[in-house]
Length: 371
Ligand SMILES: [Zn+2]
Image (cartoon, rainbow, N blue to C red):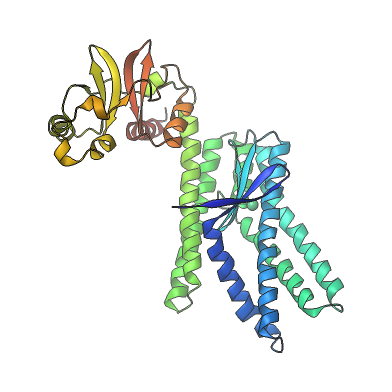
């Protein structure tokens, strides 16, 4: 279970902190308070090291927020909707609606974050210089923040999608080929190479007894899944473009009678046909939909006496789409809700069902055939 809290609202954007963020905040504060500051300033009391550690840590995450705000504000200027910015264990993420509409927009949007980090690094560098004679501890914290902002900018510019540098790379390939799908595929491959590199490096570190290697493994794993997911999304969107629910649905679906007992449904339909979902028919009309989850909610000893119509989701409660519904909208509605299937209905007639697994299989096939 994951929780997140809204901590602020800046430029009309909600700022959230995910529960996983506290882990990195504590780890980071601990690391700089017990190693970085004591190593450089041995004569400082522990309380000072820890106070500076907390301050540095908070300002580091403010820097991450600054980076994400830069992306978000540029995106909004380009007409995109920015839903929220969330700080989590691996930094920050800005939730921006939709994929960029053209290469130049993505290019500027991606570059805005690292540029903001470099500007902030310059600011902290100057601040450190100015504070040098006034307060050595604060000057030390400022120089640390300058370095870390440079690192943040450089790391994000690595050309693996979906990191900022990967987005820059994608926009360039997109610009020169005019093919978003191809551009995403290449940038995503590069992202996977970097992910692999991080994981190998992490494993080597761990083998040598450097436990921060686990961190690299974690980052690599995250990057890998994000780059695969990013490509899959673009792929689906391009394959589904112009397709309607009618093109995607399966026409042979099972119907069962509402008067069937739950036990019969299990024995004769679920186990025999290995299906997970059935439409329920009563007097020639579809009255509801029943799925494996509904059956599981009925205690075993009650299954013989309960009927399918008692446990089904009635017709007026489940969502359906029309045959002309846009393919991308159908995919989004399947991904956004808990359901795994959606019936296609016209004039109260069920024409077919779109199941998530079927849809993914169809998409894969279409992609392989170049449809
Ligand atoms: Zn960024």
